[in-house]
Amino acid sequence: MKFPTLATPIQLGSLTLKNRVVMASLTRNRASPGGVPNDIMALYYSQRSTAGLILSEGTFIEEIGGEWLYAPGIYTPAQIKGWQKVTNAVHKNNSLIFAQLWHIGRVAHPHHQAGRPNVAPSAVRAEGGKFRLLDGAPGYVTPTPIDDPSHYVEIYRKAARSAKEAGFDGVELHAANGYLPHQFLESHSNKRTDAWGGSIENRSRFVLEIIKTFIAEWGDSKRVGIKLTPAGGYNDMGDSDEDARKQYTYLVQELDKLNIGYIQLSQGFPHPRANKLVVLDEFRPLIKNALVFSNAGLTGEVAEDQVNGKGVKGGPIHAAVFGRAYIGNPNLPEVLQSGAAVKDSDYKLYYDTHDDPSRGYTDY
Image (cartoon, rainbow, N blue to C red; front, top):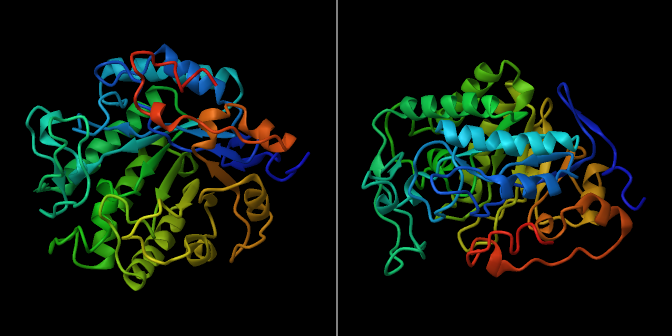
């Protein structure tokens, strides 16, 4: 066995992960119209239930005008029923799956949400992105400030309840990569002067209130996780090194006090706006109660080192999150342990199915 610690089971509260290889959330754009999970999605996740834990693709908590026309949701009865197919398929293979709950905030487009405005903490437009599937590939639009953020906390609460009904084993808040919770965290995108902005504590409030509602809905703090990208510049984010250090030091410590299941620390996509923080080194030492998941473009060798505490300040990580490697390697834990080459996948088929959803999806 090439990576023995990665192959070791680990406890996540009352749940036992059969290994320490976690499948990352990967948008694949294969849901049926109306954002309904379907049979081919159930097959896709079943194939990849070699993971100790699967993190579902980002799942919309309300009708959102995203770039991906066939991303799934979890806000209608049909969507919940569709997800039950997926969770049942994963459980048959003795694996676990958490729902990653997703709202993209200011990087939505009104054209895709029946003319309703996109929303954000403040009227600050993101720069640089385009909606490739809309005529003329327009850029982002200026969002409408959210009048009462507690309304969206309640939408997240309902999504967490729906995830439980759908058979998921827990929920993860997507608070990374420039989406709505991340937009509340950064002074660059949050210009509010009320109780939801203006200070580190107030900018953290939206995320912390959502996490508290998740815990209340599930009745078990260990069934709740979060994804963070403190250094990320994606979707026009990117506070300075020092501002990000202060913001996330406070946030991570407060999250850890809530005794949640895990904190997924992602270095984030390479981006010109990204700051220079080394995320694991900065924030791993602060985490005493939650498990630490590392997501940083890992190889098997680096992941094995990290779960053994090598090259990581503050102690070992508990599990390693792999993303695109899981697309072309459904049995990734076995591939890693055998020493075989990790197969590449076809980027052109990540989201574009050419009328055959199995291509680049379930045919690896």
